[in-house]
Length: 317
Image 1 (cartoon, rainbow, N blue to C red):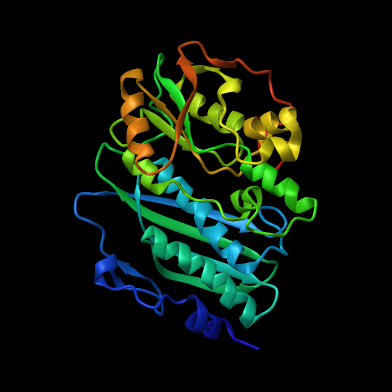
Image 2: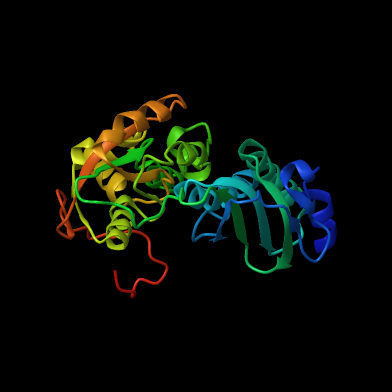
């Protein structure tokens, strides 16, 4: 049996996080000491992933580690921030060293590919849950927020939609092969960090799609004080989605399913082509799916009976 300190030392402390990562003091003390880039603004976000709420408790541990970090990094991507650091709290029902080692492999692998340094955290006993706080940097006046959309702007989305919901459906049907495209989209989402940085200076507003396109688009429109005409036939559908759910089910998943972690952005029409060119250089499509209007409200689709994920179903939309 491992103690929480042993788990941290053996599995969760990164191999190295030196001055090149902006870390003066990392894992092992009461606080981390970080070195932000002079003149940059600090972007900070936190997410908690709870077993059998945000991910299946029986999912592969490395996928749980990857996913817990990815969903937090997606918030930095939506702000156009460069990811720098994270801290993580892990709550475990038991001190299973093999499980934690596999979990840590997934978490650290995504740290490496995104340039993020794990600088501290905590391990405690309880129902399985992972809390991740991420920190990034963005130049002054360059942050993408939800509040910048203007009438006449194009509405566009990165990548493909519905894969998260489609992957969850496949999991519930018994699919366990992570090579299956839809299952990968659900359990191993890819935060669009490079795309967020590339959209600086072009996008007028942005949000990541975590609760479903319609729900998150509603948040963006509310923050910007605008409306939208959505073109549902233009929605780019994830690979295998129509085959898995049928055409109506695929469209519903793309509109309301959530867990896609793509970026939903608005851009002046004159900026759309340049934005598409920048993202195409990364192998990522940017698809126009609507236009922003001065009149509040959402047209082009029926009011959803599934308005996105809510932790507390009684809360107001």
